[in-house]
Image (cartoon, rainbow, N blue to C red; front, side):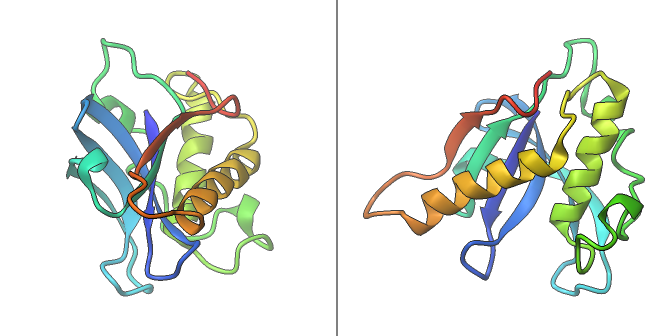
Length: 156
């Protein structure tokens, strides 16, 4: 299980994706999307050739799915997350975004103790933003993106 950050219209901001790897070049993209209308968020799961996406900035391994499980098992824990600010983020977040959904998804997965062990979602968020921003804003010439990382803040 990875988190993928992809470029957004505004430099230094990202689209946040939970990425279930199937092969080295493809997998399942699970995320909150609004199709350009910030008033109508919805959950989406679809196949995605993430590492080949020209928008991809970083992929960070945050967990593991046992061989006995598939994407549908993981999806059971995230597909019904409400498209609204969770209580824990009220006062910290100005509005619902894909990043807010991602953080709530990690909280849900952490509670299952099956796929991700991440007791501090906010620390993980800061680390992911810092890495992606450093890469994107410091990109020089033909430097190849995306970059692949691991983190000590989230594990299987």
